[in-house]
Image (cartoon, rainbow, N blue to C red):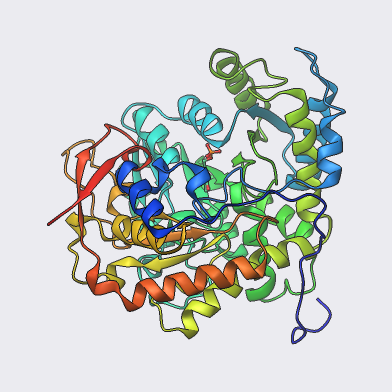
Length: 462
Ligand SMILES: *Cc1c(COP(=O)(O)O)cnc(C)c1O
């Protein structure tokens, strides 16, 4: 970075545009009712600015689009696969690559090869699909994230860190042989995109390794995490993101990655490992669930674009600075307007503290779900719920889990929107905040058995 006080701009210019449609308030009221007040069930054509997720919504570069033409669609041994292997080795430093159709495919395979019935998997907060696969494999997930992660007012620099005392307590209680691995997420999504520090990565690995407990990163957002290490951790300010990322992964035995995030592609993912024997076991499951070990659910052209995306993610630091910078731009606008948001602003989105904004709506009436619907009706900006609906029910007791954080996530796709779209979004959130007392809670009209937030339907409580 040249001079921290000068304005930065996106390190790209626009070569192709995709028109988006403004709707009327009446149209949006009808659309959200038809969608059962669940923003996941809206038709994208009815959305003006789509901040539902940054998953698979990135804009690819001209280099990636041209890479698609080089895709080798050989069923076995595709050239594109070997390019992907090289990219993962160079950028992440893992020798063994097991390609999957997306992140959850990798989580499924990893959980099945490592977890036995009755095992315990400690992790920093949880991610929906990750925990689902760990529980489905017979494991019990235990949250060992630092307390600050659950406090929307804490300004701690590394709110994604693992609390070593909590991790030790889990290992002491169950014994190391019942803990196959630590599920260590970088830039913790559900905590608001909050990073882990290099010191914490090292400490966890140095504790686990002698005990025979593996450390498996969810490295889906590791490059964004590296940016925060560069900004906030002593000794890293002058290191390039690529170098910081390599040090981060050096404190692990493998990783699952959803390539739909940091890696700048619309579909894809992988499991990366160091141990060839574990990789062999993973590949033998892969052929049953994903595809042959040299494509695992991706087409040749997908792998080609992914290899290019992995390089672009770290080729210069300008990309990641602009990516995180745009999120901070939106966040700072809301903070200035006095809107309660999770701070510090995280890497991939701004998280509105719906529990505080809609104080008058009890958590059992889904305040974050109601707030996301209200913002959509105001402006056509689509965010999503991250609170009690996403947390689901405890599989043992069948009762709702009550997460401390009840959030609406406004997630920024990479290289897609300009600062003007952020201005429109901020204006809408401020408008809804001013009229927050008129927003009512919701109740289920349909509740799916698992990962209910995707397809649940609601109606307003009178
Ligand atoms: C998106 C995501 C996943 C799941 O990946 P998919 O590609 O959606 O299956 C796992 N972990 C984190 C941190 C994610 O953000």
